[in-house]
Structure formats: structure tokens, C-alpha cells
Length: 444
Image (cartoon, rainbow, N blue to C red; front, side):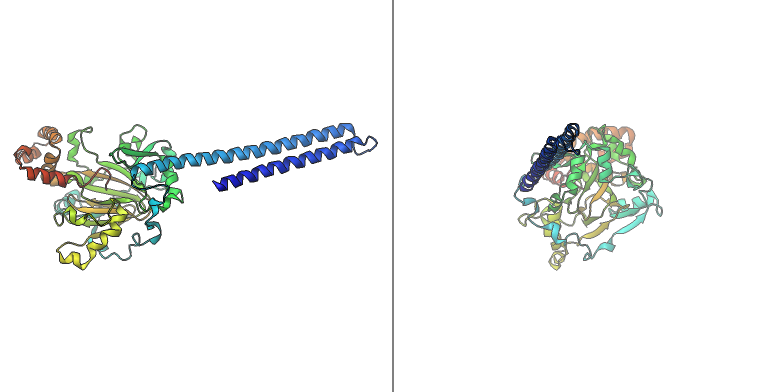
């Protein structure tokens, strides 16, 4: 605020000096006009000079006033945008003080250790496969049925959202141009309600030198954009890869099915803390720009208290988990307990990460990233999906089963062969519901 006051004082001083100079010039001209015998000055020329000088003084004052008004308007707009951003930050992380420096108190923006991936030991542990080299049937046998994660290449060719020469390329600037005043979800408040910011304000947040110091920045993670009239054109910018076009949850009905598809973008240190995707769904994540760091742990090898223990300072943020918990999972002590080390993956633009059901995984953005991701269920894993969905979402599952009896009677028979929720013990119901809710609608 002191800078603004000093600038305003400088402008006022300049205005005063300019006006005084003009008045002095006018007085001199008037005095010259008083010498009637002088050939240099006539009454007419004096009046003309006085008029011109007065006009110059008015123009100078007007220009200075306009400059001051524009400056003050700019400051007012900046304050307005910052108020919007800070209000969103307060709602998404109510435990942190925006003005007190809590958002950057850990200094993660400066240490660089978490985003330095040169020390990772398991980068070659995951297979990279091209869609040009294997068929859909081979993919199902090798990866889906065996629940084996992989990185898929050559599947994003022809996507306009991935084509940097296209006006539909998904950069922050292009999205701002297309959807300037459209709000995108950047988090949830303490009651679970969506917190949204206009795209133009998100652009400002991602480029502001103050906000870029945030330890765990806000992360745009929005699935409603594909349904809203103003933004549903985004669906035309990509196509679901052939390997993932089967999605049995489509038979639940669009209004009834859980959230399943999102556009996700954010700065370095944003991401998703460790979780399992809900309802035994698998996921694909197509990266358009930037790099993502993944840590994956096999199904059935650990429980939640092991991978997300209490009392060690975890706050639900990806950057904190990678700094506090991840190092423990690569120690000899961890290994001595029979626990597996992580599969570490660095995902690059143009690659699609396939995460099978049941895998614990955490994601950290190493750069400014842009991606589209979707959860799905297929025939290959229907038995697991049905078992958990029926126990966790019984009403939805019965609607689903009724539709499957018509379109997929073979799968309806599989569902009928499994026990109904009413036949389960209380312990089985609790266990199933718990395992299905590790993920949320804001996780990758």
C-alpha cells in the first residue's frame, strides 16, 4: 500500500509542477503583451499565445488525471482478483491463514527435493507399450486381467487438445481465451461443497509470483465441465482410447453414475495424495503438458493405516505425503516388514497412465500440467466391481443390474451368483464400504 501512496504522490507532484510551469509561461506572455510599442508582441498574438498555453496546461492536467485513473483502476482490479483467489484459498484450506504465510510456511517451493526425480530407483519397473504394437485383446490379457499398470504411448495422436498448433490446444492461455468467465472447480470446502474460480482468475493464480510460492497449490479438478453447456465442447478435443471404450457404468445412467471423467490442471507441487480409486474402478490419465510423478503400490499388500498413518504430520496434500511418507516406503525397515517398494513412474506429455483397480497411488505434478482422466469398469474386472459397488451403493447397483439383464445378461448372471448385501455380515458390509471409499471425486 505504501508503494501505491508514493506513486500517487509522485503523480500529484508532477501535475502541480506542470500546472505551475504553464501559469508562469502565461504570465510572461501577458507581460510581453503589455508593451504596446514592442514589435514582438501584439495584443492579438498575446491573447493567442495565452489561449494556447492554457490549452496545453489543461491537456497536461487531463493526461495526468487519465494516467492516475487508469493506475487506480488497475490497482482496484488487481485487489478484486486477489480477493477472489484468497477467498477460494480460505475455503479449500480453512486451517491455513492466507495473510499469515501458512500457505508457504514449509518452503516446498524452494527446496526442490521432491521435484528432483534423479534419485528414483524404480523408473524402469513399469512397461511402456504402444497402441501400434498390441491389440485390445492382448492388452486385456496382459494388463487388465493381471491388474498390471503400464504407460501407453501413441494413443493421443489426432487429439486437438494435444496439438500445440491447434487453437483448441489445452493450454491455460487457450482455455482462458475460450472460457474466460467460466468457473472451474479448484477444491472443496469443509462441508464438501465445490470451490470454483473463473478461468481468468485461475490463470492469474498460476502466474502470480506470490501464489506460486504455495506449498500445495490449488488444483483444478473438474468433471462437470463436460456436461455444462458453456464447456461441453471440450469433449470434441479428445477421444477415448480404443482400449478403454468399454465402460459398464454407462448402464447405470448418466445422472445416477458416480463422477468419472475430469479435466485436471495445476502448477508444480499440486496433485493427489495416496488413495485407491473407488468402486474397484480402473483409470486412465492422458497427459497433455508437463510431467507427473507417480508412486504405485500393489493391491492387497497394505492397509490404509500403513500407507496413510496418523500422527506423522500428513495433511491430505500430495506434496506433504511425498515428503513425509514416501521416504519411509523405500527404506530397509519397510522392506523388512514384507511391504513392497513403490513403482515410481515419471509420465511425460503424450503418455497415458493406466492404473488398474486396487492399486494405492499418489500423483505429484513436477511442472505446470494439463491432463484428462477417466475411471471405468470393464468385463475383465466386472466381478470385483459388482461385489464392491453392490455393497457400497446398493440402490444404484440394483438399477444397474436391471439394465444389465437387458444389455449384458452374461454379466447379470455373474452378479446374481454373488451374495446380496442383505446376506452379508455386518463386518463384511463395513469392510467393503471402507475399501470402496478410499478414493474421492478429486483424485487421479
